[in-house]
Image 1: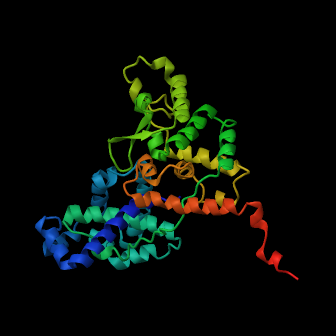
Image 2 (image 1 turned 180 degrees about the vertical axis):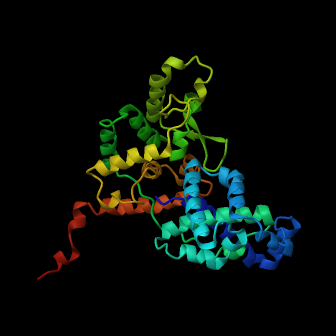
Length: 370
């Protein structure tokens, strides 16, 4: 599944809400209201002069210490750092060793940077990063916004794209294959935890021993973008049993140590630090590549992936008759629209199933031929 869809969707949702308000009350009234709340500082000519002085290096140093960056999930931080390296290298090659914010914020410069990018998802990813970086820099150093840059940094999300979920046959094969590989006990537990809770990759990697609450049949996870804050997440009884058994097997000998509750469940250094997201991604990618029930098309990038376990969790809840509002809570979605995408996928599943009915193979023309 493409990166940043959830972050980007939130930004687009905000923009759509503002457009709706502007249509109802008028853009001038919205601007006045924001000014009354002191939420929209006016950029002075002195602020514009500062843009000529603040360097790219200063901007990068501030951004990495800002809430705009530290509030991101660890996986998003890593990719934003990668994008920052690409962008800063481009800036220095084009503009010299110490480019200023004024130079790199020019719409023509950003257009030139993004012009060679043809894949929509890659462009969305780069635009999302630049919006975050330049938005934070302009707000901090100049008390301004990047409203005029929204067009060159446009984001096009296919809202009709269906989430990709594993079939039950594919899940059976993956669960069998994982038991034959290295770290079989750990990896088998990871798959069952995904399937029984629907949590995200980074949330799984940061699970600690003290996050398991058997009495409430839930685990505590660090929600997306919620730095330091843990949210309760329900988990199936079978997955909870498997997860608890793995913790007892791995850490049963250190239960009386002071830091026992803080140990990371999935770790390569005895629970001191969490397993890296990429370790889990590579493991699951290898399973997908090996699986015979998964087509070559579904093995391509942005088809079936680690995030597909979360989609599978939601889809099979829907298939079992759980209502969409309950699924929204179990998925911890902020908006119902994020959950409703599974309704379309479920409908397609029903169409595919009914077409397997023996009578569906009979053509109407068979009754009327000469």
